[in-house]
Amino acid sequence: MNPPNDRDNSRRSFLLSSGGLLSSVWIAAQWPAITAAAHHADDVSAIPAPAGFEFLGAAEAADVEAICAQIVPSGATPGAREAHAVYFIDRAMATFFAAWAADFRSGLGEFQTGFRAASPATATFARVSSDQQLAYLKTVDRTPFFETMRTLTVLGMFCSPKYGGNFRGIGWTMMGFADQHAFTPPFGYYDREYSGFVPYPTEQHS
Image: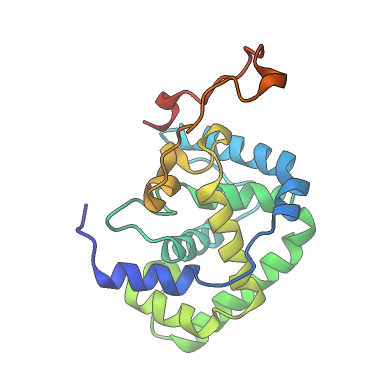
């Protein structure tokens, strides 16, 4: 892997610094659907050949993956591309975020059209250099589409690996978070006889 550098850090800071990404109320309300999407992401991550998409076309998926890879880029640690965040987003648009699907596709289309207008001599967003991608994202980072992309990418990166996203703990590793309990039973007099508590097996994250 490449060594960490200021450019990677500043890029992550710029693209992850928007407030109000997810609220605890929203997460609680959507958790069953988030779980289903994460399981789907886990399934496709285990398939050696490229998996098909339910919602995105091939060109759409390539651009969405490229955007994800700029939001949580690879570098000193793996990023959204390695976490297969594009499959999580595809599943979300096909299922529990289906109400967002029309707006998402419209926003993606406007994003692609705007990029072609700004760079008529270049190929698609997914095929240009990282510097060109980042420069264009800085012109659209306040749009509803980009905010949606940021939310979905972060959601796919940092959920528990138990549910299939955050593949092999990629997101937690990036944050320096160790998945371990800092307490042992009994937790109190009322549950000192409880024997059903089982921590997540650590081999899931290896």
